[in-house]
Structure formats: C-alpha cells, structure tokens
Length: 374
Image 1 (cartoon, helix red, strand yellow):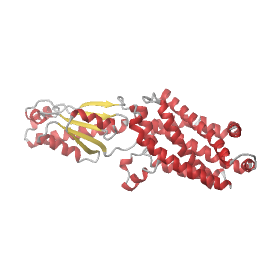
Image 2: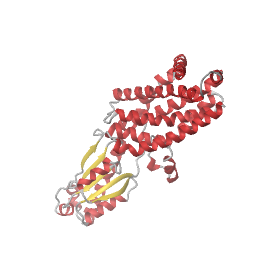
Image 3: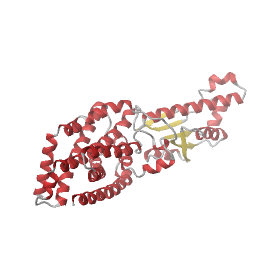
C-alpha cells in the first residue's frame, strides 16, 4: 500500500509541474461548457409520441391519422386510459403525449371549443418546441380541410380556434435548450480528459525513461498500474465537479437527482474511459501518437452517442452501432438524473450496461498494457 501511495504522490507532482495538463484540467471544461452551451443545436424528426383517444369517433381517428403520417412524429403507442399516459413520459418511452377528449366530434359539429391536452417532456427544449409547432400546424391543417369539405368557408375564422391545445411541459418548464445540452457536455469533458490524460501520461513516462526505472524497482506491476490510474480517476472526478459547478452557476442547470448516485455511476463509467486511455498508451510510442489515437476514438464515440445528433435520425445500421458506445448510456444517465431526478430503479439497466462495458474494456486494456510492460 505504501508503494502505491508513493506512485500516486509522484503522479500528482508531475501533473503539477506540467503546464499543459494543468491548463487542460482547469481551463478546458469551463471554456467548452461556456461556448458549446450556446451554439449546439439539432434537427428534429421522429419524436416518440403516445396518443390517448377518449372520443373514439371518425373525427378523432382522422386526427390520429394526420399525426401518424408526418416525418416529425413517431406515434409508437396508443393508450386507452388517460391516467396512464404520464407513465410513458416518466419512463422515457414517449416524449409527447396527445390526449383527444371525449365529445371532440360533437363539439366540432356544434362549433363548441375542444381542449386537446398535450403533455411534453421538456428535457430537450429544442425538440419539444419544434414538435409542438408541428402538432399545432397539423391541427390547423385538419380544421381547414374540414371546413372546406363542409363548404363552410365563412365559418373558418371561428372554427379554426375550436381546438385549443392545453400544454404541460414536464421537467423543463421553460424549455431551456441548455438544460438538455450541458449534461452532455459534462459527460464529454469527463470522457475526453480522463482518456487523454491517462494515455499521454503513460506514454510520457515511456518517452522520458522513467517507466523503465519503475519496472526495475521493487514494485509489482499491479501496484504500478493502480498507482498510475488512481490519480487520473481523481482528476476526472475533479474535472466533473468543476464542470457541474460552472454549469450550475452560469446556466442555472437544475440538478434534481441524487449526486451520490451520480458519483457512483461516474466511477463505474471511469473504468471505461481509463481503460481506453490504457489501451491507447499500449499501442502508442509517442505522445503525438497517443493524442491522435485518443481523438480518433473520442470523435467516434461523441458522434455516436446521441449528444450532437439524435440517434433516431441516424441510419438503421448506425443506430445499432450506438448500442456499443458506453457514452450513450452515461449521457442518458446524466440527463435523466439531473433534469428528471431519476433514481436507481429508472437507471439500473444503464448502470449494469456500464458495468459490463467497464469490466470488458478495462480488463482487456490492463492485460494489453501488462503485456507491453513485459
């Protein structure tokens, strides 16, 4: 144990003396969150939707047909009970719920107002806003066609307002886009810093010859590896804390969930990122090679994580590849925990998947690194 502590102390001394790593740790998270939080946006398609038809008439069926045949909505569920609609938003199966009230057809025929209820998951403010706009357009188009078919153009200005959507935005009432994007940036920073710093730090040791000196010292390989990895893990957690703190102060990002649970899941995720760093260092001979390989991996997992581009918009083959990306699951965990306040019973599946990825990647990386040492 004492030998491991000496190695940890040596690592922190080297990090303190390295200006580039200090800047990477202290400045990069703040700058990236500040910049990316304002500029990132995405196109909206195939928003998962659940419809509850309480009217069950030809009018309500015609409206459902209109809502189903649009590229912007994906009507995946039909629920008969209004009381169960909210569970689709709670579990993340649907982002929008449309409740068609009973008496809808009768009210339209007698020119009485009808209130169509829309429940919206406001985590992704951009998607919610755009989807609501498309639904409003579909309702208006349907009413226009209905009036024309009845040869009652004179009543168009009156009847066009007979359907009044009643919107309730859950989890993100102000539809702030930053509330959705910033958690993803926090995850990317944690992934980037721990992968880059661990890969470059281990390769630097080999370049300057100190790794060979440690190998001939009275220390076991697993003690050397533990002493090298722990500082990078602690730096990653510090980095995450700085990023979350800045996001909370600057963007007023809500953190509704349990931070203790998030810390536990973050440590599990670190096994994946540190494993990637170890793997890169095992195949790299110089720091330049380590940086190039790290960025190649980071860009790939970033693009395939659903952070910048909705996974639903990707080709089917690319969507299947995203299931092999650990960052996809940790971004979902971060958003669900920060904004929804999701607990372990909602996130245990993602947590188990991260455990599996972490165990596989870290074990393979350790074996490859030890082989390289030999």
